[in-house]
Length: 96
View: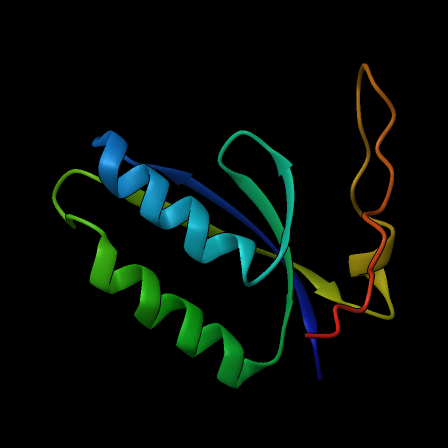
């Protein structure tokens, strides 16, 4: 079952920050600075954590994973906004 995760990161080095941002673009939708929404199954979560783990300096950087629920359930409706309204990112198929 796929879960919706909010992934937020605080990276101390600009070079590592760019690498983390580039990695995250492949896993989810960019919501705000250093915040992504990802829909992941358990295997994908392990892969993402492993990829991030290789980029981080574990004594300086931090990545938070917030599980907001199943993609088809609570995860689809649990994000609200103050200020500009939140719109669920649209998904587009990319054919290469």
